[in-house]
Amino acid sequence: MKLNRKRLVQMCVERGWSLYRLAIEAGVDPSHLYRILSGKRGAGVNTVFKIAQTFGCSPLDLMDSEEPADPDKHK
Image (cartoon, rainbow, N blue to C red; front, side, top):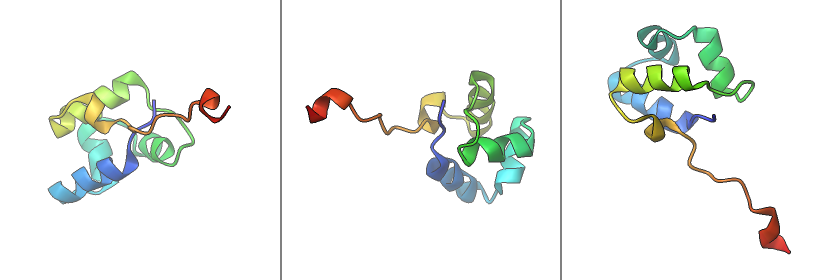
């Protein structure tokens, strides 16, 4: 799963939190969160739910909404 980094940062800024604080509040290892947001790892379902619960939002609000390009579209 790919998280929307811009949205997460925006939600942190609204609360006056750093990404480190988000990780601590959500019970996620900070280095794990940084790897997810840098694209080195995908986010697991449990991690997405923990972050969503911390923000009081739907997990879908945290997901990257960009859909992959349809390879058949260019034919």
